[in-house]
Image 1 (spheres, rainbow, N blue to C red):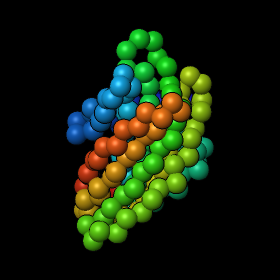
Image 2: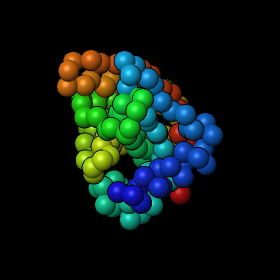
Image 3: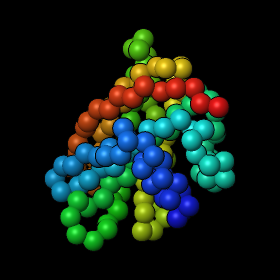
Image 4: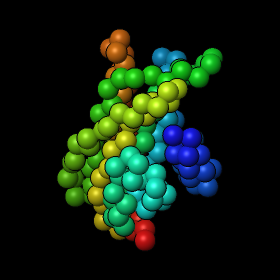
Length: 142
């Protein structure tokens, strides 16, 4: 778990465009990152059942209380990805719970230099929901 968080933190710090990928609503921060799976360390990808492939991307989403001590939140995370042709894929988001962290992972395929449009909806157990969009150009990685 610590190794995954360190890897993801390092990726965020190395990628200025992804440095502040966060949405805030009702006192909740929703952090997200979208990257090629080949950017993941092979051991970490295997640990979480993520297949590393040149044209496969992954989404990592977490929800935490915005102010105060760290508190990861559970909920429902719904992600759809649309390509340039308008094809829409609904991602199967898996919840990973490694206290105190909790996050949601999903993968998708893309073509080289394709801009992917993500629609992300998070719903908390109390029914509060927030939807936002993110688009990112994806590149073939080796």
